[in-house]
Image (cartoon, rainbow, N blue to C red; front, top):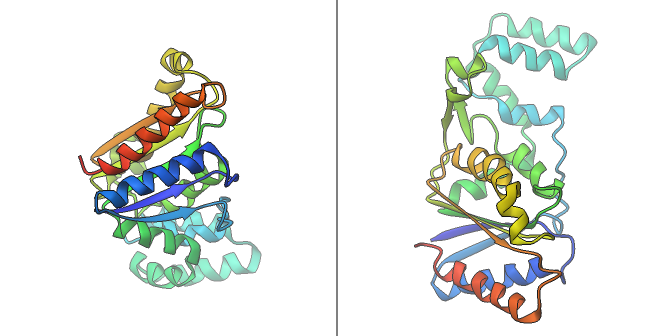
Length: 241
């Protein structure tokens, strides 16, 4: 199996990095291939900007919505010229044009995802969610036309009108935490499951989403941390199960 592992921690000596190393070794021991995307090391820009709109356009976008995107991302004479050009064009004409201007870093990440059979995410929990650089990676890379489409109902605001496009068999999320297991059973885990596991990964179509927590890594003893690392290795070795 070809796995894409997205890693987000700025400290190369962190426990998160030890998890990454053990997980990678586990994958290798089972014969899987693993490409690691280290977001901090590559200085990935997590900020979605108007130039990213080119990645959110395909033939299924309603023309009126497309015009609204153009209107919000251009100004003055530029907006007037673009709107004039749009008058006699089909959405397919616009797609061919704007796709030339898709940010290369996003296209590169989408290609890596498309080629992967499974995804793995390794990051700490900050403010009951992903680090900003990882959240921004999802916002910029999981675009319309790549991660999902919308039905007519979806364009009219119905959440059930989202069509999943991802084909990966599995996503494994590994999170290191500050707080203990009790805190996550009391509500933090449910919040992350709804926002990250369900909406972020199941909703775009990934068949199996598993989220593993390494609780309170700064407070547990050395034996427990070693158990966590052994678990990370096993998660890699048994990834295809």
